[in-house]
Image (tube, rainbow, N blue to C red; front, side):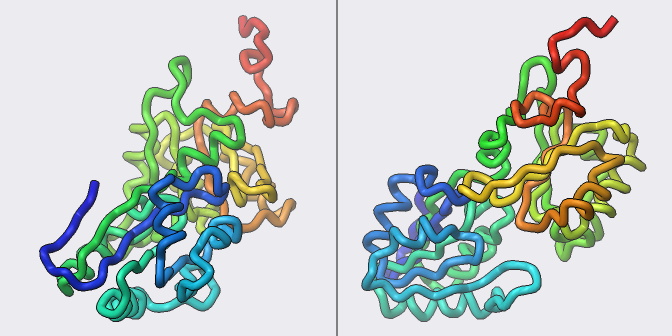
Length: 265
């Protein structure tokens, strides 16, 4: 979908970079990076993607990782407005998809309010691609007909008092959590309180789709200790549900009889 205002000033392209593997960048996104005069990019955009940017472009790091220096959201938006008023092609480059926990909707609204033309270029979201690179289908006819994507970054979100973990636990067969490692213990507590069994499989996938991808498989009742033991760190996607046990990377010790193709009764 293309959203263009009637104002003919500079233009901002909100481009999804995908989860890291440059092969997952869209053709439209690649073409815009090659033509860009200004690129404002987030911390999680991979070096392989950044290498595709026009070498003459002004590259500006906006940050956006917990515990590391970042531009304030208002500073980022103001920078985009100022650059758009001066440049023909301005790319706002975001990891994954701009409209999936990427604050792309906020930036689009602010830019349009300032009279700046905007085009949204979707990207492959990590919640789909990263599990796939770990051999986990987020839906499966025998195991999951529903998926919920949720952010674990705002446990007491600014837009509402809290995330409805009870509803998520009861209403979805697969749960994919973005940016949840920092709050993992609290998230797991909420899900178990809502009724998810402690033996429910969970996979944590760090730097998914990149050469340094790393996986941790556990259950809800063991994952917090496993993270501490492995010193498993962000950024990571969490996948919760029976589909996790379909991964060919699953340790044999976690396989059930049905996973091995053995009779269960």
